[in-house]
Length: 298
Image 1 (tube, rainbow, N blue to C red):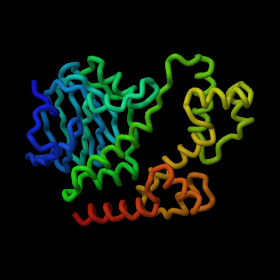
Image 2: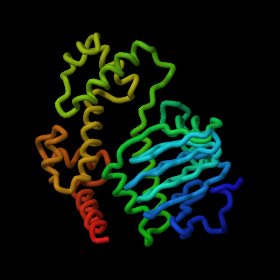
Image 3: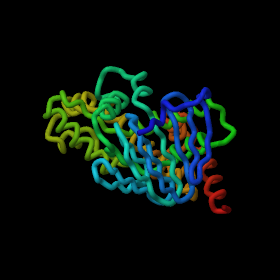
Image 4: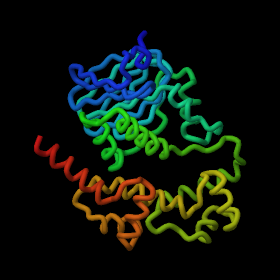
């Protein structure tokens, strides 16, 4: 068996081109692979790591030879693996980010409801390959990947963009503390389900409390205790994430996207989007529009 992270040379930042993919070592504990061609890769290592697999086009089949299980990946897939005997096959555009367990360990907070702690705990288990979460590829992911894979980017900037991608992807995990009261989790889960079904025009707090068979005070208390945020902020998060996905549709204007997710005023929406993602909607739309034209020409 080999290692992805410990067979490094004297240089920490290194780009290597192979037959059908590029490998980039960003720093001790982070590396990524990118390919826009047909891939057939045998991957045998003993590293414990988190994998962020972004399938930008096509589909990627992962065969776990240790467990005898096949996975067909699309969109953004978050997985963990403690030992690998994997076959990766597919045709399309793939970006695979590998994050070593010792890199995650630097940022542990001591609570399992924190995404880094949760992922570190899972990656330390003796799992050959486990899919933890799947999400569609969104505009912010494309924006960050486009910056990461630029050949002229420096090592420090590349690590910064990779960290931003990790934070964005990890923030989408839905983690509930197993020590919480089951009744409080039940109330919060019901409320969350109702908000997910209609966050553009969400039910009022009194209506939501009625749907959850509780009173308004208890509803707000349970929701904040379970999900570490208020109902208002959670609705805003869902709206902005949906807007982020809609940025992929280059035919939509910022005003149209704002209206689709429940905001009447474009300026207010743009300010909230920037506060949440650190980038203005206009910049994302321009970047993704340029990327779409470039792909069309190629």
